[in-house]
Length: 171
Image (cartoon, rainbow, N blue to C red; front, top):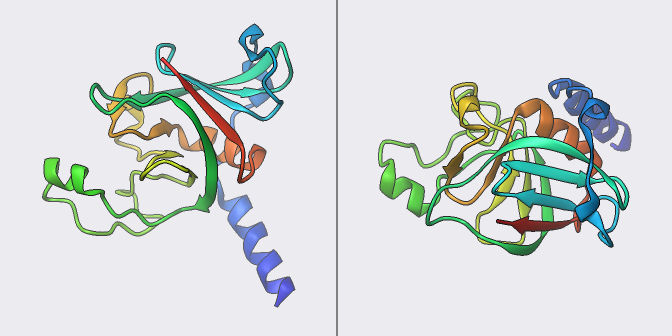
């Protein structure tokens, strides 16, 4: 049984898109200050998510942030990690897009969660990948509260963070 689980996890990891060279995106990040390495800092203004490496550097990922009226700020924590999660549109999304099905299976090209999701301890908020057609939203304010990333970036981040990771949202 343990061998089967290990094989399944290995298969899931090798099936994720290959992350871009994260080392190429290491940037000076003096704002890290006293933040612990591994902390995620989201800058809505910069449309960037930073994975803190140390007190002066971070890995920078481009993101899409919540649209006007859906913004949030403060501290949250990663409370779940999921590969190719199913997606059930929240009521607010269904209200704006009644044509959506009640559930889009994980792995579907129409599933806006993409290849991975890091859920936060906020109501229906996640850091997640995206669909091919929604990639163009990266760099904009487009979501209902979630943080969208390129699939290759969320795959890289998924492998770096654990449940309990602190997430700081700035505007």
